[in-house]
Image 1 (tube, rainbow, N blue to C red):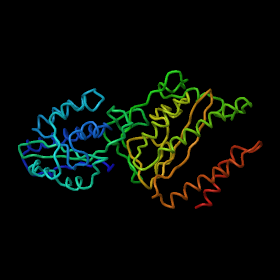
Image 2: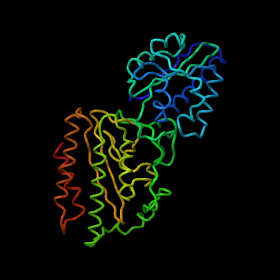
Image 3: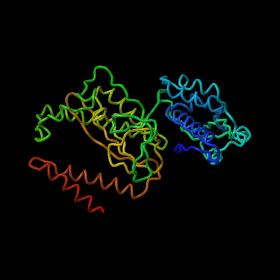
Image 4: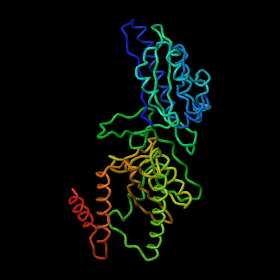
Amino acid sequence: PAAPGRGRPRRRSSLPAAMADLDAAEDAAKELLGIMEAFPRFKERAVDPLHPEGERGALVFRGPLKLVQTVSKLTCASKASTVGDRFKALLSRSKWVRQEELEQALDGADGLDGLDGRLAAYDPAREYVAVVVAALQRGPACWHQVGGGHPASIEDSGPWLYVLDHGTSRAGRRPGFSYTGSLRPYRVSPRRPVAEGILLPDYAADGDPRAEQAAPARSTPPVVSAAQAEKLRAVCRMGREIVDAAHRVIKPGVTTDEIDRVVHDKHMEFGAYPAPLNYHNFPKSVCTSVNEVVCHGIPDMRQLEDGDIVNIDVSPIFDGFHADLNETFCVGPGVTQKKKDLIKASHDSLMKAIDACKPGFFYRDVGGIITSHINGCG
C-alpha cells in the first residue's frame, strides 16, 4: 500500500488557549491514526463492513476535543488485541462517508489539504482512508491518512510496533535514522510461538547465545565424522526446502511478514528451530533483506513491490546441527538489469568459491576468490 500519510491543519494566529487546543487535538488524532495503522486487520474488520465493496470514501470519526481525547486515550491504553475489542469506542462513534459527500460532511474543516488526492489515489481493494475531526473553538480541524489492508492469513492481533535497540524494545512511532535510500522500516508483528517438543537453543529465552560464545569452533573449525556429515546434509536439504517454500509466495503485494510466517511454519513442520528467532533479540524466524538492505533485514508490514529484490536467509537447527543458506529473488517483471547483474555477480562468486573447496584448501582463501570475482564484475 501507499506509505501512510497524514494531513495536518495549518496553524492560524490565535489566542494561546486556542493553539493549546489545536496541539491537544493533533496529539490525540495522531495517536488514533497510529493505532489504526498498528492493527493489520483494521481495514477488513473495521472499515470494510461499513460500505459496499469497491465504494470510495473514508472512515470518519468526529467529535468535540474532549471526546477525541477520551477515545484516543481509551483505545491506546486498552490491552485488547483484536480490532473489534480494541476499537469498540472509536467504531461506535465513527461512520462511513462516501467520497462525493465528504466535503459537505467535513464542513470546511481546517486540514483538508491533500485529502482529495488521497481519496483519488488510494486502492479500495487494498487500502482505506481514515479521517479524525475535532470540533474546536476556532472551528473544526481534521487529520487524515491512508492505511493498508493485509491478507486474511495474518492473525487479528495487535498492535504491531517498530523494532528498536537491536530488537530489545518496541515503539509506536517509526524511528529516526539517516536512511541512505527510499526504504523505511514498517511495523513488526508479535513473535511467533515455537511448537512444543522442538529443542530450544539457550538464547531462545533471553537472546544471549552463551553456548556459541564458548564453543571451540569459534577459533578451530571442526572436522565432522561421516555420521555427522549425513546429519549436516539432512539439515541443509531442509534449509533448501524452506527457501523454496519462501520463494513460492514472493510476488508484488506480499509482505515480508507473510514470508516469515511461511518460513516459520515450515520449520515447525520439520520439527526444527529457526536459528534467527531471538538470536541477539532478533524478532523473526528469517532475514528478509529488500533492495538496499545489505543483510539481516527484519520482516515487517511492508508489501513487496514490482521491481524489488529480496534476499531470503534461513538457518534451521535440527538434530544438533545447523544449516545456513540464502538466495536473492526478483519481485515481478520490473526488476532492473542493474539489480539482476548484482544478483548474478553474487551467485557466480559463491559458485566459484564452492568449486575451490576441497581437502587442503585454506578457509582464509575463500574470501579472496569472492572478492576477485566481484571486483571483476565492477
